[in-house]
Image (cartoon, rainbow, N blue to C red):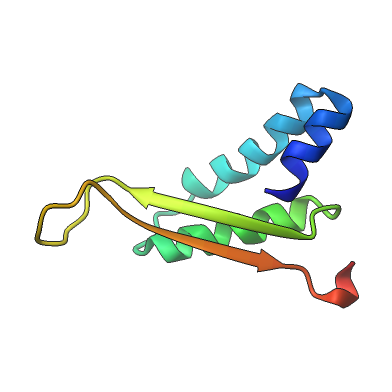
Length: 88
């Protein structure tokens, strides 16, 4: 997400790198979701709420075992969410 590379590079801080991971883990280990789209939306929302300096996030979620017929390694979704101009 937007803050991870820039802040880590500037501060060389493990805490900055781990902050985003904690937000993601909170969603992934939270209540089960039926759709990977819901997981991606929740992760994006959590990152934007917890990191006011982040203007946009792109979240990719992949599920390796899916209930879809055919030969698939995984099924995934990628979303980008941005703050509204008024929030910046």
